[in-house]
Length: 263
Ligand SMILES: Nc1nc2c(ncn2[C@@H]2O[C@H](COP(=O)(O)OP(=O)(O)O)[C@@H](O)[C@H]2O)c(=O)[nH]1
Ligand SMILES: [Mg+2]
Image 1 (cartoon, protein in one colour):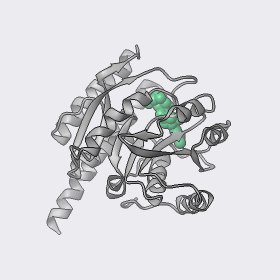
Image 2 (tube, rainbow, N blue to C red):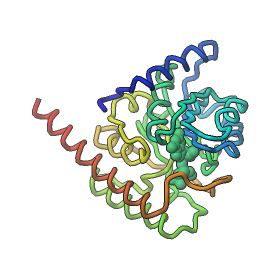
Image 3 (spheres, rainbow, N blue to C red):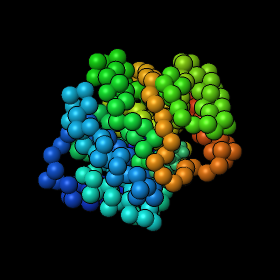
Image 4 (tube, helix red, strand yellow):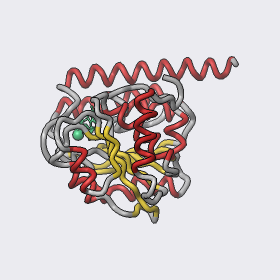
């Protein structure tokens, strides 16, 4: 998919979203959450989000894609603007649509967090601050600079190994390439290629770094999910798919920069 190109389904959903929330006030900071079967946690997550971060009013956009439970209702009751995609396409597809909805509503900045309660609202100021000060265009939380309660040795090792690989590929230090708590200038999401339907974290990070944007990581705390279990499959499958996205994105971005230089 080309830059910021949306499918016909996305365009229809964006149009419906626009009409459904035309009367709701705009906010400079959109907090975008992809949610899939998170009825027991998404309401708590949305309710706990701050009304302002670094002095900027927030608006929460939840993209629910094909949940078979009451995720959309729970998010809406908690005050989020909800886009109900109707089919399950994955976290990457949901976030890409969420970024578009945020830009469409005029957001200047976008933050993301997860619907399962693994990230703390009190870390959001720290993640947002380097954007507001102009120090960075894209800020990712890092559990390795901060903390994690996970005792999953394979997952924790995966974070270290993929961080080392990505650091080598993008030639700058990355410690946590799969953190879901991040902040960016809204324009970044429209200027990089995002075509991963599910394992989107490394695609966004690598494309942003190789696109010449200023990156920064800040310490955050990562907790266990409030309920349920990961939607990303077992560690081996997750690792394999994550690795494929890392290498595939790096190769694509290298080709893109070579082609740009040539033309
Ligand atoms: N919209 C959408 N969200 C998803 C999907 N899979 C996972 N998510 C959401 O993405 C976030 C992270 O997913 P999770 O399964 O917790 O991954 P993990 O934290 O890496 O184990 C959570 O908010 C999930 O609800 C999906 O297929 N579609
Ligand atoms: Mg999770």
